[in-house]
Image (cartoon, rainbow, N blue to C red; front, side, top):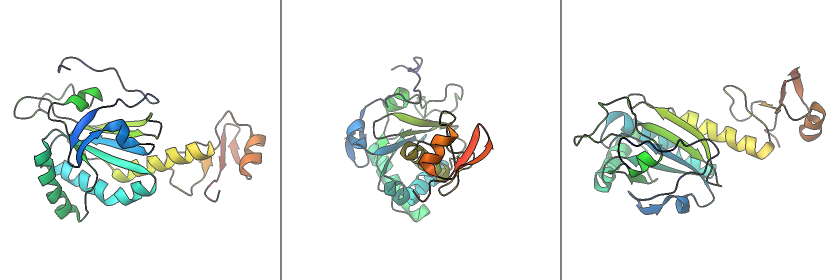
Length: 224
């Protein structure tokens, strides 16, 4: 795909596009990699760069938490496999973690263009060859390979990995119990009964329901 041709937008609920790629852990087929699990695909501009180093270290530190939730991480860099593999040593040293998830080598930007991980306006975000570098995109994908959340940050702003973990908790809780989550929700907090569910049905399903307004009703599913 040329740098002037934009891909179709990836919408929430659409199937994550499949691809094959070389990674720091070997060659993968993305859909086979997901293999009935949740997955988080996140991109970075390049190896051996400061913000990316801190981010990959943060993902590595929280990887046990993601794994406990059935989530597989996979990063993406615009550099070749050898350079990414050497970079991992720096990430481990600086973060004190042990990075085990694969990092995609996307030197031709095939995955970046497929997932629209490119900043169209920042013409300075290019490599030595003038090829666009990837921005900081995040895609949370469920076991049915559906896109459930997308985030895009400029190359100059690091992401909050704890927030991405919180979103996974919210999505999984919503799927499990048929509820929604209010602002700043974290596990064990009250959840919100969706508007289509009547209060009577909510009480039958959840027990106690706290009604603030007819359209705003809270319950708690942390012990269920």
